[in-house]
Amino acid sequence: PRRAGPSGARSATSAMIAATISSRGVALTTPTPIAVEVPAAITGPTTVTTTLPELLATREGVCQDFAHLAVASLRAVGLAARYVSGYLWAPANGDEDSAEVETHAWIEALVPGESEPVWVPADPTNRTLGGETHVKIGHGRAYADVPPIKGVFRGAAGADLSASVKMTRTGASSPPRA
Image (cartoon, rainbow, N blue to C red; front, side):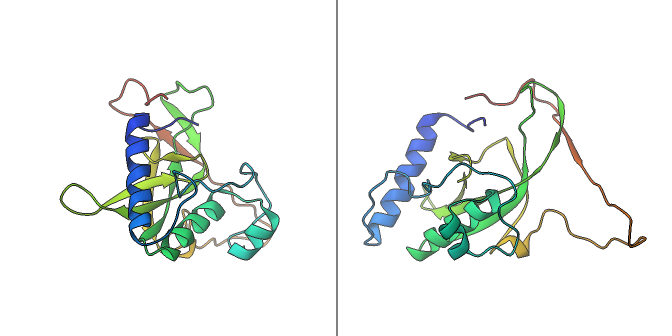
């Protein structure tokens, strides 16, 4: 996956989050409190009803699981955090102007800014900060607040429903590269 923004910006934001958590009396053993050491994301082991204890027990999950875990972890130390639902621009060959994309989940944490707090997007699944490759649909407390696809299907009981999302880049000559 591509990393969004310069690595210095990631380090500065990680340091800011770490300093904020430290100021609340929580000792950190890692420089990035949003990097959760779990196996790489895999498909299929969880559902939208998987609980955090189940995730921790199996140590397997998908982006929505890692986002829920990161939100809960940040809230546990007194930081405001929210679940974000959207799409991740990650074309197979890396240079297409259009690509079919899948839904993705990440978080935003409220951290001190220069004059007021700012919401900083972070993608715990890919261990990056959010950026131009993250296309936000909405944010809420958890998945149930902002499912990427929601609606009513009316058709025959045996009918199959299929949907896809195709994103097309406009105005930019190429996506950001790490």
